[in-house]
Amino acid sequence: MDTLAKTYQMESYFVFTFAHVTTTNYYSQTVTLDAEPEAVDIYILNHIYSNDVVITQDNGLAAVVLQKGANALSPRGHLYNNGEIDYLLMNRYEGIQMKRGKTKPKSTPSFKNEDKKRFVCALEKLLTKTRD
Image (tube, rainbow, N blue to C red; front, side, top):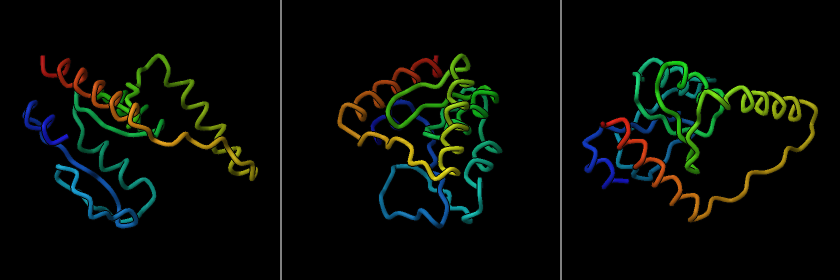
């Protein structure tokens, strides 16, 4: 990732709460927030601009990012788009309902090298598009 930042001359930020503090170096400026509900989402939404890139696996955050004219990319390399967001939000709603009903939702598959490669490829493609 460090080489991507140098290649594209971009600023990057890793936004998290005190509940998720890490010692990992993400080659980004870190922004640590109080562990309030939605603190990270609100911070991101207050600081993004059109054509920015937000990496998230949260469908709700992705939906609002798209509404602000920015780009949302999942850590597995999926580029969110306005055409699918209603479907993704419905899945999110159903997942919340399942949790409330104490039904165990299907677990997410483990993160694989293919996911990492797909992510890097999608990010490079997106950065090239937004730079032009």
